[in-house]
Picture (cartoon, rainbow, N blue to C red):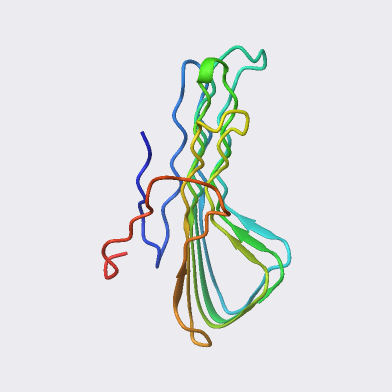
Length: 178
């Protein structure tokens, strides 16, 4: 099973889905949803709504819960976004579980920037979580989205999964409603 993409890439307000519980091990929490509605914003640190990793046994002989999906970040800036920091909403990485009962990785979240001038030179990250490295049978989480709509740039949508592999498509089918 794999999750489907949901929520608006233009105006993201949905929280990330929590990971699935496996046996008695809880899934990781999904990322939160935050909205900034300001005149100017400067980011040199990190703004994050990452999904959490699933829980697992400390004995190494149990299954692991699935990891949560990234949440949403909506930046509505009347004038300018500046800074060199990180704005991210990534999925939680999977965890090891015995007998191939590894927890799944969470999908990336959504970020949208609406502004007059985008002078931000930092990093936008919305990739899925990494599948468990010990066995590549665990699929990496799918890519999230970054949408930028600023007066000083051409509108653009970014889907970047950080070179992580996921065989499922991140479909965007109705541009008018998303």
